Image (cartoon, rainbow, N blue to C red; front, side, top):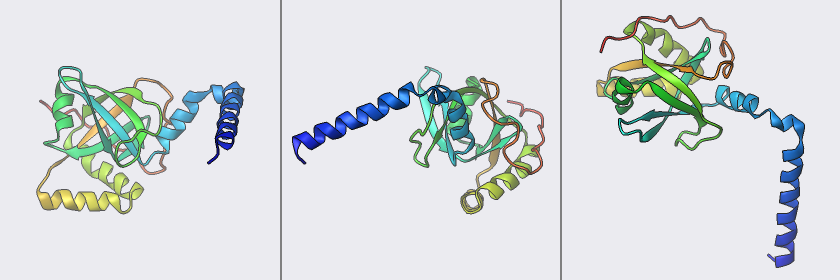
Length: 176
């Protein structure tokens, strides 16, 4: 490519960025971040080690009444990290954990076994192939599932209910 054409394309890209930045409709970024989180296929769930080091994991999730529900294995590292620090960060991501939007702070807790069956039904309904396949693989490996509830610290980031199905009950927290 010639140098003149490259310079012209760079100038055009910069002018488009300047127009976009000056557009008052784009100033309300939190709404688009909320929409990105609500419409994401995966979220990057970031938990923190004892020394404060963040550890991100892409996970499937379902939204339910202003909270996110995540299924994980009972021996997963994220559960060990949540045992000492309930603070998490979530962001929309792809299946490899590459973030597709801004992160939002939240608080996580482990729900009791009564939340598993309703959560799995919703997870399988949302992810018609990946959900049941992951459940089958976990069962073949003999893994026990646990449900993590994530409540976002920023109110209104998620719509009250993203799916029309019945809400998952909120059982007592597992005793540690």
